[in-house]
Length: 117
Image 1 (spheres, rainbow, N blue to C red):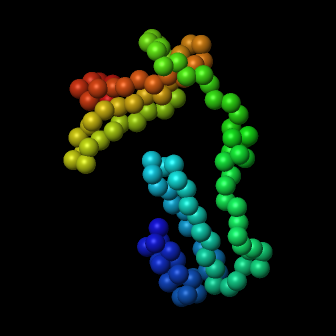
Image 2 (cartoon, helix red, strand yellow):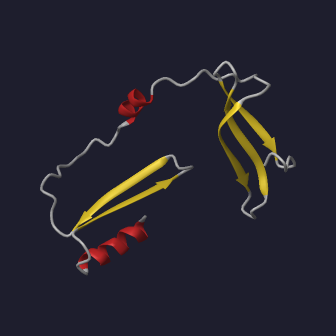
């Protein structure tokens, strides 16, 4: 993110626009960061800000389905990922799915199960 900020400052100082918005994420796409840079002071900006929006996000999201940690059987995939080592070799797969009752469950996929991976 620091390289993006430096590049945006150079562009703004060169006269390429008045404002710049930068967005980045980190962790496993679990941390979001943004910054607005401007060539002029932003009159509406007041500090300090409370950037904790977790309660608003929780209220918007609604309730999460129950999790069934012992379920085995058919399901509908909601999301999945393939985990790779630094060498690029597959380490494992993870599936997030729903069973016919609507409960959420996880499934681990062995790196040797190449058809599923």
